[in-house]
Length: 496
Image (tube, rainbow, N blue to C red; front, side, top):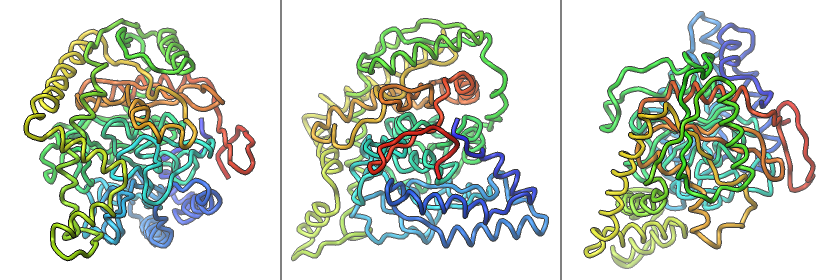
């Protein structure tokens, strides 16, 4: 456990007047002042705006008004979510100077719930990456070992929670971009069912795959965050008009009688220490009364290939709008076509250019049927395979990441090795099903390992029920901090 106060405890203290929102904020800003230069979790720290907001929360409490379930809770937002009056960059030069004129739906929901936004977090440019090394503003470092990556693309959001900069943060997950960094940073990260959380105001990478979700220290905090941001939104045509359950209702119920699926044809490639923690997770749930059942998901191993055709294809379309005319950067040139080319050449980084080219190629005449069309067929087969598996099991367990956090630069020269980081997370994006990464012990170099719990669409309550049991039974891993300067480690309560 982290040793930090829970989101629920912070909000309860602020709502009761036991603590002021300003004091809570100052505590978190002090941590940011101490370590942000080393970690670079944020593209922009919103200290002044946050102080004004915290004062408003305290005024509301003093006047007898309830500020909401997240009263005074510091929250960090991935910098691909639109925030009215605050620049949104997607960690790309091409959006230089762009300030959204509105809040995205999730941002508005969090404001209404009493959250205090402390900053916009760093990410791989346009959410394309697995290490947060692809940002135009520099890499984010893992707070647990600053010689290593925090994962990606939502690495800044994961690092902000792991470092104690905010007890709650939000990212987007297109192929694992919440669950993989959560695993590498030792925090909880949820990708909800596709359509459960509004995408209105989220800058699109791959529209049929993107989903916003929370990072937190505990499953309970993540469940509380889900209660705030889930729900139907008429601004998002893919939003699900289904009643909202109580995501915390089953957290203390245990797992007796539940069926936990073990995928027998899971792709190989996970490190031995990760495999060992997964086996221990199955054993722990069996001891708790669950039944372990073997299931097959034959298409699982084709997920990576299908994803790297579908996601770049959608990205090549979505990113066509950045042309130097309507948004951000504009590089002057003698004619319109030259301006387009010069702007996009200067504004996009190498990984974004690579994926635009991949997607454009896959959609081109003569290759659509050979590549993109077949990827869509694999996607449908995968959904059918998972549906059959969920007839036999209530949830499935897999690794969240094939390895613990890896050193900076160790995968950048080989894009395919970086893509393999999302082997176990991509299928849930292709099927639209929910998934959560839960810290479960440590692996190589005493770094955290994440176990992923997958559930059928709208199955978050049972998914979180199992995640909470894993959290209770996880080996104690404390908090480990290693910096480039000190190269020392410790366990303890929080990060100063």
